Amino acid sequence: MKEIVPPPPAIVRNDMAATQALFHKHVVPSYARFELALSHGSGSYLYDVAGRRYLDLGAGIAVCCLGHAHPEITKALVEQSGKLVHVSNLYYTEPQGRLAEALVNLLAPGKVFFCNSGAEANEGLFKLARKFGHGEGRYEIITALNSFHGRTLAGIAATGQEKWKKGFEPAVPGFRHVPYNDLDAVRAAISPATIGVLIEGIQGEGGITAARPEYLLGLRQLCDEKKLLLFLDGVQDGYFRTGRFQSFQRILENAEHETRNAERFLP
Image (cartoon, rainbow, N blue to C red):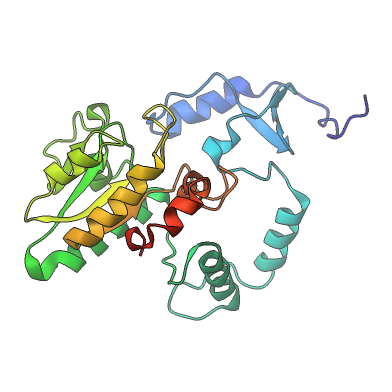
C-alpha cells in the first residue's frame, strides 16, 4: 500500500527521559500524563521521540480537527506572522472582522466575543448573565448534573461534578444543578434569583449524552416564558464535531418539521 504520510526523520537518540526530567523539574503536575513524549505530527499521525508512529484519536482533546502540520494552516500562520502577530483589541484588523462575519453566518444574526479558551468563554457568559439580571437582583444560573464548564473557580462551580470542586471551597455562589434532559427539573429549580440556563448540547464527561430535541425546544420556550437567558456550551461538542457547526443544529435537524410548527419556541 502506498504511504500517504512521509516517513519520520532519522532518530539520533531517545529523548524520553530528558523530556520527562524537564517536566518534573519545571512544570506543575496538574495533569496525569501518559508515558509518551511526542516530537511531531503529520496528518492523522503522531510520532514520539523514539520514532514510533501513532494514529491520533485524541486530536489534542478534540481541537486538531484538520490534523497535524496541515500545509494550508502552516502557510496561513507563516503569512500572518509576517504581517502582524498580536496588536490587542485596541485596534481594528480586517482578519478578525472577517472571522467574526464567517462565524455569524454559520449560526445566526448577532455578534462575536473573542477570547482565549473555553473556560474564558464561559466566564464571559457568567458575566453577561449577571449584567443582564443585575438591575433585578437576578444572578443564578441553572446547569446540569454531570456537566463540565471549565476549571476556573466559576467554571467548577457551574460544573455538575463534585470531583472538580474538592479542595477549592467555598464555591462561587449562583449555580444550581439539575438532571440533564429533564425539563421539569429545570422548571422546578427556577427561583426569583434565576437569570439563565446553561447546558451542553452533548455532555462529554457526562457520558456522551445528547440533548433530546424536545428538551432543547422546551428550554427555549421556558426561557422565553420566564425571561431567562439560554446558554449552550459548545466548547467540546461544537465547531463541526457533529458535522454541523453547533451540536443543537445536528440534534434538531431531524425535527425540522417540528421546529417549523413550533416557531414560538425559538428566538
